[in-house]
Length: 323
Image (cartoon, rainbow, N blue to C red; front, side):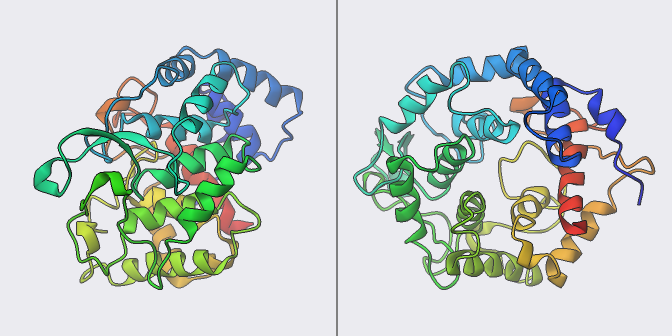
């Protein structure tokens, strides 16, 4: 396979150059070139636009968790870039999230579940296992792992694990809502979101919950022809390369599972990696195979040219296996 196209990546947007230096070159956060890229990233108009939009509360009511423009998905993207809770504009966002913590622990979002799906049809503050872990993930990535509110949220969510991963679970405000599946089945996306959050914790990354969750994900891959819990498939659409990380797809699953070092010789995960590798061109560049319309103005919002962000994320996954 071709080598990592480092020079090409460093010619990209400042947030791409920043992550390339940290994730692929292994440069220190105090390296002058890294610091310069970080300052340029913070000044980038698109990054600034995301921060400003997320600082306006309350966030829009969730219509669909799969909607790529949802505020919590945009927050996760900022966290993946390396934006921290103390960066300009971020304290206001963090305060807005912390202001809506449920009695159980998870942070709440404005939601509206129609009566036909078991809800009240009214706007509520509530949480579901397809959003709550992602809010926690963002706060952990942004440097708030020691905050008591974050610890409480994570502890409660970890406690929802079953012997086959995490279920479809929601807060009491959402009534009898449940996704389209058998209640004893694991929810693939909730399990992925929980593993994503737990992967950021040195203390919890090797926990029994993570071993249970990762085995669930890999078993679903091995049995993808016959098992489709909550109508989550791992077929043709699943295998299309798509960023940023929003929903249940090959790159998102690989990015999360490759963070667990004890999985990297697992034949099922290696098989998934092989599919990703096969999609690189002779120069080691990757093209999007599907795009989120909500991100059409970004570098990765098109399929005609190779994407630097997609290429960076793909090589970061590959490099984890090789090291």
